[in-house]
Length: 309
Image 1 (spheres, rainbow, N blue to C red):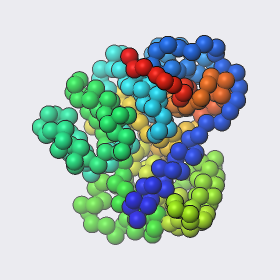
Image 2: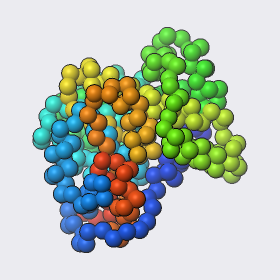
Image 3: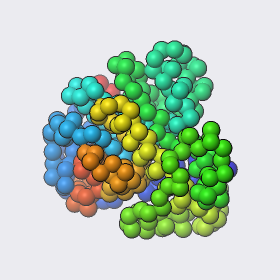
Image 4: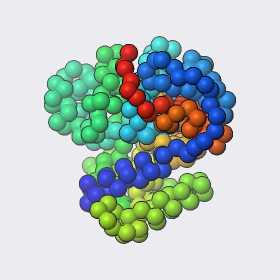
């Protein structure tokens, strides 16, 4: 069940994140890796001006497409640029689940080997190429890294039985969860998007629509609620450090998902959002319709070959 749900949700995230086409964009292709352009409310913006704005935030939420290699390179670039302006920062990641926080902390502190860390932390399949550079940057500079995600065994439980099943878990299990019961109030647009996704896509391997677990939307809400709670706890525990939260765009675009929950939970936080969107060419970037998807939209070119610098 766990692997089924992990595979299904990963596929659905990628589907939801697929960018639309087409409006004109700035001409010219940057020579640096990754090739990118930044837009704010539909208007082109230099990268450094975006980072200046990010440095004034309490929380920066970056929504990605998990398979976008240039996008991951851009995330590292943002992390490096933010650190130069705000060395009092921390990284929070969907890519690690809360129950591996101790292992992650041990690795960052140099107490265990990389081999032991990878054996215990359940890293994603693309960790070595896409996420390790961010973790290693934080390790070298002694920056905290937050394992923000809910353990997938609980996501699978909710997908099958609903969130009421969480209330039966022992106290030791519930310490990895947000406060229960978590709210099932979500923005209407997000509710409609999730309804459409979970209604139109069934299980992998040929299953038809509607044959997946019955409480997929509640499971998505648990995912969002846990990451929002992880960020909120980090802001309190780390005493004013800027938190850079990294997650799939499905969890934060349009200010939905964890962003909506975080803003409701801590309304005084200054939360800034970024959506990193892959395009095959600049002409494929939909700058007009993407203008409200995030405070900043970063388009990355997905066609190569590229040379890392």
